Amino acid sequence: MLDTITLERLYQRVRQAIPPVEWPVFADDIAAILALKQARNAVILAHNYQTPEIYHCVADITGDSLALAREAAKTAARTIVLAGVHFMAETAKLLNPDKTVLIPDLHAGCSLAGSITAADVRLLRQRYPGVPVVSYVNTSAMVKAESDICCTSGNAKRVVESLGVSRVIMLPDEYLAQNVAAETGVEIVAWRGHCEVHERFTASEIRSLRAEHPGIVVLAHPECPPDVVAEADFAGSTAAMSNYVATKHPARVVLMTECSMSDNVALEHPETAFVRPCNLCPHMKRITLSNIRHALETMTHEVTIDPRIAVPARRAVERMLAA
Ligand code: 13P
Ligand code: SF4
Image (cartoon, rainbow, N blue to C red; front, top):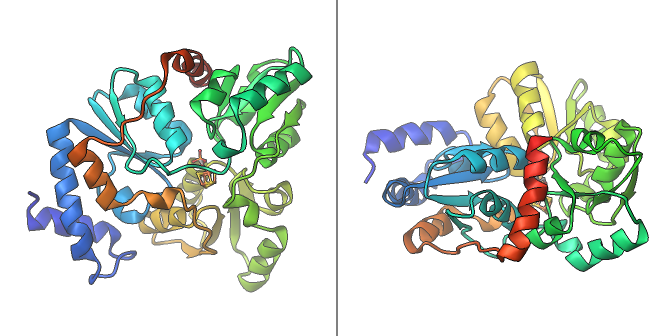
């Protein structure tokens, strides 16, 4: 088990976010998880929306969906624990068919991934013959298997432009599609899926924040509605927002995205003041230290994908990584 000096060093990373009274509850699970990772030859990939005790104390790799997919493709570990939502674990499995990929809670879904089925994609293809299908990674493996190529919020513009066509089907996020269409000359046929976290932000909320905090820098995720993105100073993936704070050191910032993201970035940038409207993703919040520990103790829940789905789905993800 971990010595008290190592645990104290970990606490120093998160002490601005976790009160001392709560730490002993976390410390027990953290010590167990770090030992289990070694015993199981496991890595923990954690999305930027995971809570600080996961993100800063047990994760080996953190990042946006694109970084997690890239790192999943590179890891030498035998076991991957995906601290994030189910489509992220499926993407890691697609890129590592011979490894064990675990998700601590099988019900960690996503409103975007849940908004479209493989049958819907087949109908779209019938309706728009010959138009390529670009699927956001926030989709099931079955939907990816019906797609030509995947994209994330970090590379959507590049992926769409890489196809060299005048019209694409981009699904399932209507707002991401509209935001990408505004940046490219490509006509985009969109689906009506929305992220239940980002659709709640409004342009008038940004105007109120600017009135209340003059000079505040507003960063928005491209899953936000287009009028929110238009009102923001910058729009980009979770990694791009984090990078903006790291490189531009704004005095005061607001991230129009899931609220643990601000907690994590604020811990790394005490020079920046964060205004935090809190929209939580209930799916991301299903992942906890205690179910990560349980996942490693019991080697559950293992993500499996039927090879008939995995082969075409992997092709769409790998084509994205090569774009
Ligand atoms: P990123 O790829 O920008 O991290 O976004 C993933 C996600 O689920 C945003 O809601
Ligand atoms: Fe899905 Fe939105 Fe949650 Fe991201 S924040 S996992 S897009 S519901």
